[in-house]
Figure 1 (cartoon, helix red, strand yellow):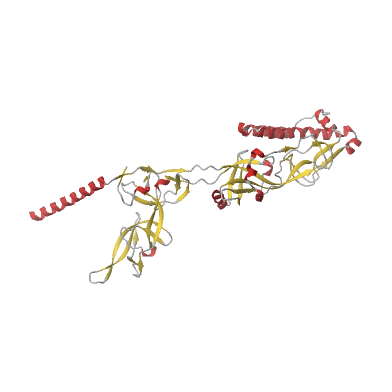
Figure 2 (tube, helix red, strand yellow):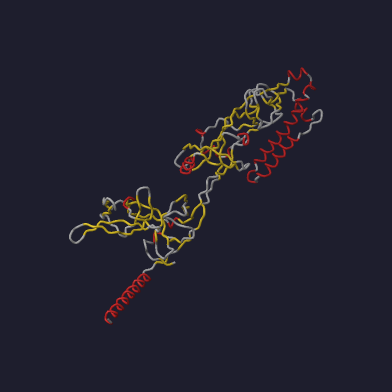
Amino acid sequence: MDAKWNARIVFILLLFLAYLIYLMVQLINRKDISGYQVRAGSLAINNVYRGVVLREEEIVEGSDTGYITYFAREGEHVGVGDLVYAIDETGALNDMASSPTGESSLSEEDLRDLRQEIIQFSRNFSETDFHSTYDFLYDLDGSLLKLANINVLNNIQNIGSNYATELVKLTKARKPGYVVYHTDGYESLSANGLTPAVFDESTYEKTQLANHALVGNSAPVYKLLTSENWSLAIPTDPERAEQLKAEDYVQVRFLKNQQILWGKVSVVPYDQDISFCVLSFNNSVVNFCTDRYLEIELEESNEVGLKIPQSSIVNKEFFLVPKDYLVEKSEDNTCVFLRKTFMEDGTSSSMRIYITAYSEDDEYYFVDDSQLRIGDYLLQEKTLAEYPVSAKGILTGVYNINKGYADFRQIIVLYENDEYAIVKSNTTYGLNEYDYIALNANELSDDEFVFE
């Protein structure tokens, strides 16, 4: 009896000694691996662009020579037959506007519009964009002059009926649209005519059509925006352009007035480095009728998930096993399969094997090679159909080191840049927030012990 107990004690001591030796070997060969705690986050993506406006624009030329007086405010929508301007051969209307007869007052609506213009300019003013001050000056000047000119129109009969009919030519709109009082040479620009030079604002020139200026016959007198449909073209790299095109519609915030519109995306390729992304809209053309260039921010759905370094990501091969060969599966993703074996007398049998699944799709489980080799056969439990193990698939993942060893976990990348990736959280085979992963995945292999 004592001999048996002694034998057992010796056996237990030998096992304990073997375990100590194993730990010592692991300690000697250990790798000091830097860990990274997984946290939720998002990627900072620069979605601010400056683009060129494309519209349906028509320059209207005058048919008389003289001093022009505008009666339609810039940005105002005129219909067919609405008064837009008058041509005065002598300049008397100009004198009347400078020293109007009678008293002119501003209505509450007039005051509200002027106040809104001033507030909007003050809110968006930038010292680096000082030329906008001149645009504001022209806009405000146009608003005030329109009010003065209406007073002139009401008192034009004071000049005399013959003078009014012969020397002052009142001109009305022949088409409906929004009135604009400048030209810039880009009125016929279309998406197919875009080049990088179009976006060079240092060469851009705008010719302002001034009130009470002397104009000649066939000279441009105003511009008409004839459609609510308009576009904004932005230059970007071809890859980014295709990403935007895949979304079909994107939400656009205009930095000028913080207005948000949905734009339909189309792409005009230019060369291997540049593509033009065209965002098309069907309303609000009047809000930007005096602008050729606009700064916008694309408000895409921000991908939020688990933020991990690119150095932690690794690709790994796994065996593919059909799902209908599964016997059972536990909550910790341990799968039970039947593997075909051969007895000493040459007859075949089966044995249950336990293998960890690292992912799955509609047809297969991705399992490791700890108990499988190419050439093994798995058996279907009910039919005993055989499946030869050979097919492999690749998964993208990281090494989880929560338990002190490298445990591969699959990741689903939502978005990435050169330094980080945003991956889906709380997936069956993936990561959770606050998990620890290896910072440099290429320094590890499966089940290897790690020390931080």
